[in-house]
Image (cartoon, rainbow, N blue to C red):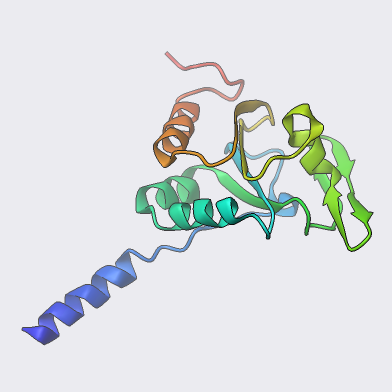
Length: 158
């Protein structure tokens, strides 16, 4: 009986261990028909770590992200390479031993980044959902599902 239980637990663990697929700005094609979900964070942000742990442990959300969006994790203070996004090129701005990426400032409301920040864009790069701080995963899933019901311009399909 112990062997059967152990085998079932191992099989369930393997089947349930779908890895979260994470894209980079450089891998994202502007011609893609998938929406883009940007998770802007920093390495020192404890709330960001909690949020990512929640995302990684939600199988429904992982599947939704893997199959329906380009999920980009953007570390606003560690990403130093140039990023081309929506027809512009953004650079890293060093400041002593740290710095910030210009894209983080551009994507932030009031030009001052808050971590974490969730930004959901349609395939054309139009911001359709913006949330600063910890987000309830039900809200995030609902926003993604609602976006998937829209056409590329961001208007609901009837």
